[in-house]
Image 1 (cartoon, rainbow, N blue to C red):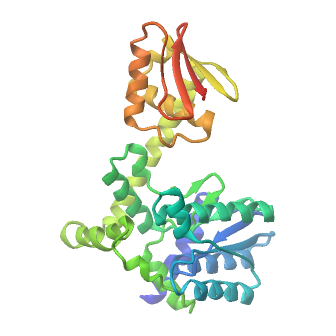
Image 2 (image 1 turned 90 degrees about the vertical axis):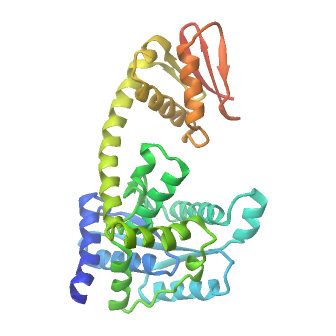
Image 3 (image 1 turned 45 degrees about the horizontal axis):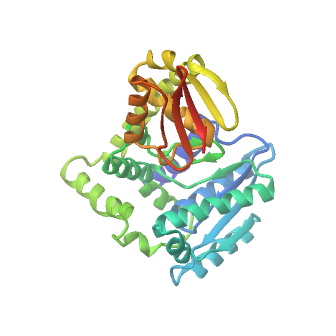
Length: 335
């Protein structure tokens, strides 16, 4: 049984890499490694991938010391020594995450995540790498879906964590946490355990340690797999809708510059409501690189503005964007 589980974790990861074409010849990959079971499993498997690949592949480890827990320095040295032993280039950065969270008035979780990803990007540029590997697994994906539901997500939130998003790849996304932990035991990786994962003051920890175990015990012991299947179905449907949105965007587009996008109002209003909503999000994303801060209430207001066109009117959903109607055209502009 143990041997089968070990093969499952490794084989699942290799199959995921092949299925989604996550790694190609001559890739240079930054691997985010905390020292915990997930990231150590990912690093160990990617080392094996590099060793077994006939064409050149390179991995570089990036580790962030959040300076929160007493064990942080020990974890940093652990990852550093593992990399030295396996001849893997290692970068680390010490960041006072608590101070950054207080300064920016955001949660410690969000501050830590922002700083980690910023450092991964920094190492990627320094090393002229082209991909960043993150150790999210199937449990993380299920937790994210549940958290999104609790926040009142749209359909996109049911996708959870994507296996591939631009330069970011997640080779462990089809492995469950117990398989990863078993792999670490069988390969003698001796990962460090972050005790804060058992502290239920954080939303994700509550979902992980309270909500999911309760659902498993009372409703569905296979809830992780069930949510994963739901996520895959939603992803397929979203990919189809995104294609329709891009086609519709082309039909309504009149002009596009760095600071402004102009859409044809009449053609826009002929679209189905779901497509119109998606066009607004797609347009704002093209202009700013993100639609963060634009919620359902903003989209509803914009659709009303477009359907009740009387004179010159405008909306400013946030401090960066202005949307107004003039001469039967929709202007989406940077402020």
